[in-house]
Length: 257
Length: 278
Image 1 (tube, rainbow over the protein chains, first blue to last red):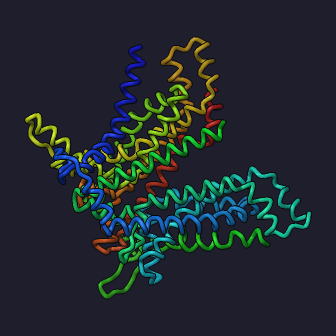
Image 2: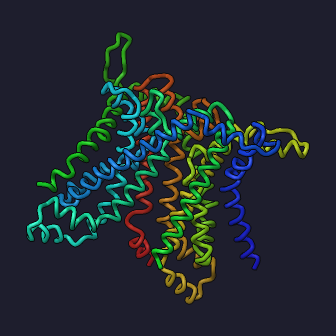
């Protein structure tokens, strides 16, 4: 019995630790003062000034734009690559998969500065394009890792059978292979999208010229001290994530039934 | 033919944006610019990295990352066990609650601690309410450690939880039937079987901790604190890309070495390791 209560207490303490900071931000996002210690009355002013903050709104736009482009490009390149890699000789596959894991295992800061060095050496101006290239680079490996296993689960003669029956390679890909690997493609695209939305370090080094994502905006604001607009922003983001997770949770449950 | 062509763009992309940049960093790290503006091969960037100031930075990074990993393990393992043993109807929801903060932006999570630990933060507010003197929590090493533990705790809990969930319960039951008391069963069966989860948890906490510059920048300030800050400063502030590249290479080697150590301890997949038990 004591054991059970200990467990409950421990769970409450850990969840308290995880959620207390978010709760503090949420509560003080409605505070009628810049203070995050003393309650001075209810207000929605910070939410209003959040939506009027052009830096945040512009970076929100870039975040979504970059994530959409990068995840689509990475998914396309990655899916076709997985197709090619699957039919390669074993040693080639091994080498390629090792290279594939470099961006996953390398610390973000090393990926960031090495790409920055390349862009500067190529005389490319740091901005939207370089940021998209960087995002595609760190997204592709994850697409490969989610699509390649689907090829391995597929009966290996399926492509040959389709080709023997007179399908053109492109037709066989669309009608035979694609339906088999679709779940992997969707997973890969979702991983790519979330990674891109959440990235800070690599974007920080590979962008410039006033282009930046939400993480960069938060970083530059936070470095200058406490900004109540960020409290409002995190409250909204928390609600979005929570709702998304609840919906996903419900959907998977329905699918399980 | 189509099989070959289809991976072409990928191979080009990886060569151009993964391999070439790393080779460039490697080349940069082994070159110094002389006063005349000429480039010459030298390893002086690396010997400079062994200057006591920078050794201290490296040591501090390692120390704080190890501390964060250890604390996450101590806090996370019991949590993973509690989650794994929860009745199904609470479990899905609890695990989801664990994932939600992870999906929140990393910077927002770190920023939250700035507001809590700050001079005018809620902790000092409570202290002054009790009539106690204010304490500076922010801009200390402890704040950075706290930030790391807070940000990376789920990375420790989730892999351990997954391994515990997948564990063959009949092994545990067999051990119990054979007369093992709770402690023995844990020590001899559950814990050894969960080692793969621990190892991936440890690397998922250690690696981002040792290479971060964001947490230390926000919760400690702009000084050269950790190896990540050092690299960032060399590239963006000091503009000594050669030295910065050398430090980046050292960080890469450090990560590779720690992964090799992990593999030695881990080795093979979970099933094989389970078999080694017998």
